Length: 310
Image (tube, rainbow, N blue to C red):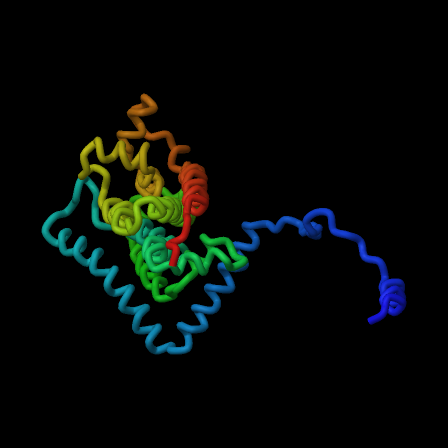
């Protein structure tokens, strides 16, 4: 190409600005992470539900099996009462109230957040790295992954025992509007408390590796304890589950208020002989108070994660 032709090409080419810095990135409005998390959670759960319902007979058998296995716990309590009339001053319907509320709360938390205890195994096999690059909050992905609809069996079984207990206690309990409302609030707030413990345990696994069994000792082990009256446990244990890991607010305090019974550890802390009635309604507030540090611990765990390198 001659000099004259090169000059004509240069003149015909439009002049372009010379970049003097990094390219400008268009501003994108910040998304609400809560909304995105709920949306992503719903999409993943929907996918697993459709997969489960492909084999409906298998799902029904798993659902019935889950309910039957959890029912064996209450059968053991009923067999115990074939030899005694009361346990720790509580009758069978009163213990059934504790059993039903705790089982339903744990079942709901296990259904919605039960898979977060798999964080440790995901860290080991490197599958957590795949979730980190997806445009959905990590907690929503971990909780919704492998969503097990069969866990509804535990909830249904707990609610069934609860309905029987309420029917049996109809003449022994003076039901008011507040006490009636307290029953569903107790189940939902208890599920939130168990869920907070699960999230905190999942955050702990970023540091300790696979510690799922440690978390289970507070969730499943805690629920086993809450199925029995507090009068059969030592005072130090009652103080621990009231002021350190507040599992007592799952069902003990609300249920004892419904039954008209005192709760000595909390009453002694406030310097009163009996439990104030309003203390039974603290479960939602306690659930929020527990979930805040649990969510902060989760965020700290995610930020400290440095991948497996695989």
